[in-house]
Each structure stands twice: as structure tokens, then as C-alpha cells.
Amino acid sequence: MSISIEELEEKLTEHFRENWPNRKPVRLKEMDGGCWHVTSHKVPGKYPAIRKDGENITVSRLVQEMCNSKIPEGHVARHKCDNMKCVNPEHICSGTVQDNVNDKIERNRQPRGITAGMHKLTEENVRAIFLDSIHSEDDLCSIFKVEKTTLGYIRRKNSWKHITSGLQRITLLYEGDKKSIATSGTCNGNSKLTEQQISTIVEEMKSEPCAKIAEKYGVSPSLIQQIRRGESWKHVTGGDIIPVDLSIRKKYVLKGDTHPQSKINSEIVKKILAEDRKIFSKILADKYSVSASLIRQIRQGKAWKSIHQEDNNK
Image 1 (spheres, helix red, strand yellow):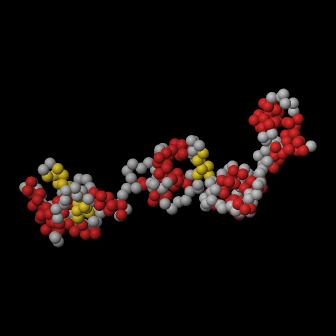
Image 2 (cartoon, one colour):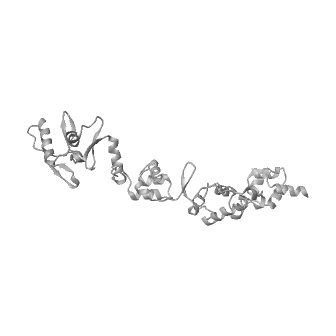
Image 3 (cartoon, helix red, strand yellow):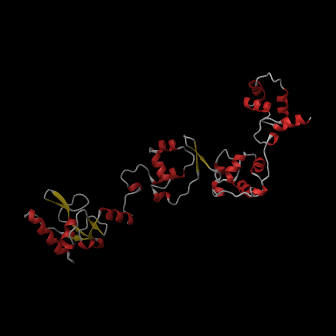
């Protein structure tokens, strides 16, 4: 039903005087947007309310039941105008608490970021945490006085979305339980390759075996395999598995002098084989700066087999 502001003042005054006969008249004032505020009585809190039968009843709820319709049990009075002090019947309707929450989200009224009462971070702090690729998680927690879960929420864009939604951060690599943070690609100080070389390697994989490519660039075959499987240098390869034509894969094994990680050469191996068999492997390992297990493998013919084959052919 349509009602004027004067009629509502009279209705509210009559209702209040049922309990307090000497109560002064209720006066309302029209505000911007057509909202009506109570100006004659002090309004504690966010919602104008009266005390009746030992409990507080909001004026907006009273107005809804007086002028519109009865509020079902479990429902509340909702404000279409988002003004909690408004008592204009045309701005009030009944609904559930969830309806109220949905209104708050849709109209972007929920507290977030620095408007949330419990926040510890500023918007600049959040940007720094999201983009940081130097400090460990423990360091960041110490610097900003927050928990690791808070860092995770920020970096996964589960919280402070209005700040992080437009940001892009460097991929992080986590190693072991310490989760030490390292930047990816050429930003990693230990990187032996460049983005341009990775792009070239991806093309070479179509015609050359991984072992040969590894030898060419002075890296391990396992790294080339990780690149091929999309496990390394994802920001260049896109993380996709690189198909390899098996018909062009020939047996190419890095061994002996051709292996980039070899600590000894064929001449040293020949000297090791020439040593007295009674000398302990540990002594020879110290002498040639290799492991004792490698000395045993050489003696047993399990390593550097090509040297053994040369001796057998003589």
C-alpha cells in the first residue's frame, strides 16, 4: 500500500504511545534517493529500533508489517535501497538472511581489504606479497606479521581479489620441505639456458635425440627430457608434452669422454685399470678424485666398457 510520510509518522506515533502514552510524536525526514529517516528520536546502532515486550524490534520490520505484509518466521526486513536507517515502506521488503547476503555481494557492499575490521595488511603489502619472488614464505611471514595460510590465499587469489585479479607473478619453484623460492627461467641464477635456446631446443627435438641435444648445450639429458615432458621451462613451452618422431630417434648414448658430467677421461681410466688390484678402491678414489663405487664399476667392467673392449681387441 502507498502511504505518505505524514501518514507513516502518525501510525508510528500511535504505535509507540500504546506502550508509552507520553512519548513525543515520531518525525521523519526525506533524504536523498527517497529514503525516510527518523529525526525525532535518538537512534542507537545501525537500525532504528524500539523495545517491545522485552526485546528490540527494528522500525523497518515494524513498517513492513504495518504497511506491506507480515514477515514470515525466519525472514527479515530487507532494504532495497541499501540504507539501513531508511523506513520508507517502498524501500522495504521481506526476505531471508541469505537474500540479504546475496544483495550485499551483488551490490559490492561486503567488507573487504582495508575496509574489513580485522585486516593486518595494506593494499601495497598485498601487491608486494603477490609479486615477490625473492623472499621465502617464512621471511614474508616475519616481514608482514601474517600466517602462511594468508600468503597462500593471496597468491592463489582466494583473498584480496580486487587487488590481485589484474596482477601476473613469476612462476615459483618449491624445493623440498623448506619451500625455498626461486624464480623461473633466466631469472634463476643457476640457469644454464636462455629462453631463446629453449625455443631452439624445442625445434631440435623434432629431429635430434635428447642425449645429443644435452651434449650440445652442456646440460644433463634429464633436463632435456623434463623440457620435452613440459615439466621445466613451462613459461616458454606452455607446459605441453613435445611429440617426438620415434623413427628418427637413433641410439645415442653419452658415455666416456663424450659425457658432459664425466670427471675423468679415457686416459685416467686406463691408469686405473693398470693399478695393482690389491690396492683398495677407496685409496684409488682419493687419488683420482672420484667415488670408490666408480672405481669398483670400472674394475668390474660395468663402467667405461669401451676401454675394456679396446683391451680385449688387442
